[in-house]
Image (cartoon, rainbow over all chains, first blue to last red; front, top):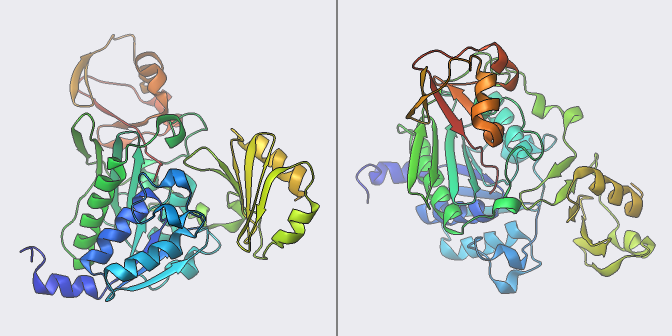
Length: 323
Length: 67
């Protein structure tokens, strides 16, 4: 066993509970490493289902899993890797209205999300409740990792305002090299183990480009005027401000209606007109319209691929779903 | 005036006075990046009122949102 961990460190890791938000490329790599490291409990949260174009970088899934829930499929594989870890899963979209019920009681939050608004919700909750979290992000051949533990800056010190649409490149415009989530997740989990053991951990933002072999640690300061960790104004936890329309990493648009009721997918399917390639199962309804792929989930979320911008997505949403 | 951009020395014209000028004239297409001046992230609205001085250290950070 590594000298810096030792039997006491392993005991500490095995007594801790970790929640992972997002089971995509980063998330599956993170979960794999945490479970093999022997954390006490791991809760996997993801709203999505496995698709064929996920397989080159989302390491816990295979062709036979296409169409299955990401969190439940990952949980089943992870249980077969290490039966001593308590593994739980949720098919849910983490947002301001439900983060508390998901995360309460966990020692650490791991970021496997693919969009900035979700990270802002995690950041606000984590700072407010004093729970450490490890941010990770990927783009093209680059990745970045930052620990938010209360001692240093929070994510809003780094990103005080949300970028405007089109201001920053996305996974859609730049793609992601499949080795990048692996190394980014490995750094995130290394930091997680240090935090779980109460050891000294990385301060600042680690940024790297593994194609150019560049690694930089930005040691920027906590902003005393930061609205989140300075003024303790947690605007992203205010449900009235909840962003209901979000552009996801692959460029698709997600619309989350307010409320908690479930959709009657068969009823909606029966009412749809002028759509193609419709498929319905107990979990989701899919169809194509105007060259866009629309998926409606049981929890009423709608994901529209190929819409390009939020306005077009909203238009399709109201036109075909009357919502 | 001599500044450091991402750790590398750069000589810029004295006509560029504000951080906003620097972003618009020197960075151009990279204006969507996070700008850190001497270890502090600067908001867009603050750039006009911040004046560069010799030896300032500017870091450009591309935020990564994919996962």
